[in-house]
Length: 311
Image: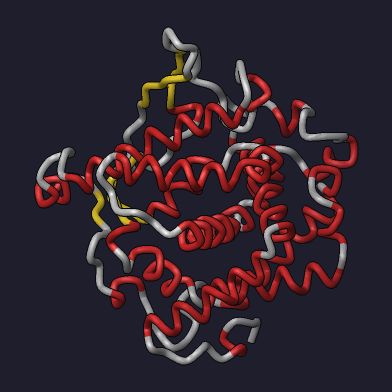
């Protein structure tokens, strides 16, 4: 069975969590096998695939000031996204996005993460235990499935573009980001445990669950930078004038493939998922904990709040 389209998990022939657990086991096993040496000589592999092992902090742009995009430029993207979520496309997004207090908190969180853009990438990759070779986009549209004689779900994987050694917290987000938030929320601890166990069983080191959780959440928030920049693209695929007549995400104008691609459906669903993560998983506190950890790691002072906000 499969492959399946992204962000249409109601088409799966069983519990979506079962499919994503199978994807995690496969991806984490691959990463563990690489750590054990079973995927070949690491030096040879590094010549042919992206390799973030041992990359020095300077390569990530670590600096005392803002290491992300210019804050003023980011603020305009935040404002455009907030308008989509709270007004034009409000029926597709959580009601809390209309709350001015929430909007202020969201803006501050994105500005802070942007200020630490380089530092966050260094944090993801500074410990080699959390960096390994694995598929970069292990989604239901890049796999096919079958059941063995015991009825257990098994899979094959294709589309190996972007294969390389990167942060496993980063990769885990990109394996799970297209699932419905409700499934992710109900099963997230199970997903983390599955990744940690599968990675270790295949020869990798034991990872700390909370470190993996933090990397996952920060990677989700980081994707929001690109999604906010895509608001104008959303309006090109579905004109702004059409949004008032859209009742839910199943409307063909935002729910079906446009020009043969799932882009608009993916953008809208993943935006919602990240918003729910930030609200329900207290991502602002996760971000504060990250700031403390990365500043301790780099032996640097916390950044001046002025570098995280619009000039």
